[in-house]
Length: 424
Image (cartoon, rainbow, N blue to C red; front, side, top):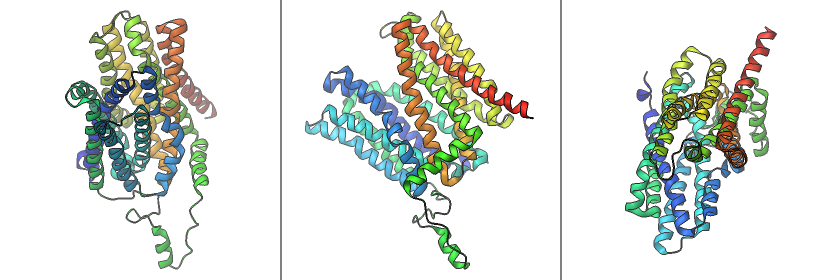
């Protein structure tokens, strides 16, 4: 059955497209507003940092909350709170009380609420489409996210002129409200942890056990033990543990690429100032991501998750080297598009495998831990290391750290595979 005919998936896909478009606009409007409000480059950097910090602060907590509650309800509440959070900015601006501190709180809170939403998503998507369709569903969602991000970034400039930066954030607030309504329209399934009734959050197995005269299940573990349970599963699953390391290294490379792309265009390719070719480089990277989202389902039909990495990671390292060594922006753009395709294949393949092998009751904890390591640690660390190397050794050295990270990830998977072959 095509995904568009799977009950509930269409509404869920539309919810992700709506909020993704609004978030893409905010990604441009919020830094612009922060700079206009404070005239401080430091404030702009702090706003960006607040967008990733929640992954470190709340990563483990969000996963445990998602696995202990009705996931659908958690997602709806997160969307409504995010709508209120973003709507506070144009309201404060209209009242003349908007401050830089307010913007920092909004950036942090909005990213944190998005993290709690995503913690619910990891369990809901397998429930909607079934684990056999996960690769296609995740690729569809990731591809849509990339498309709407490109569209949102492109629209942002015009929207800022029409509505001003603060007013533009009101549009994002509306997008979250639309998302909440669409998620509410998704047909109910097992949105809570296994054994939890998705309608009222009560433990359905208790009633069943009582009806059959059997012993009730053991009580739910304490919150801290619930967090440790997810960590233990991730640590003890050999393949998932390796793929989590690979995903973190891949995210490190992404942070280095995106963090230095403007500098690389200027110092490495001779594209200066407001030259429109800079936008083409970003579009090439994003377009590659769309290609990767279309490619992954076909690859997963032919290769299992781990063997797929054996070929894609070395290819990614070679394509990254082609970008770093490119003498011309056209060659760099082509290599960036191909590299972006390989990059997204690795990340979505890792996410899909994790959802496939993780028990339903642990989906939130295991997958938010992975995201905490990739988005919360890998991306900012990659950007920081690349910028430091650029300052000391030049921009091509700074970009090369992304290639080294992918090559290291390839070395990890090949060393594991070789050990498996030797044991056989």
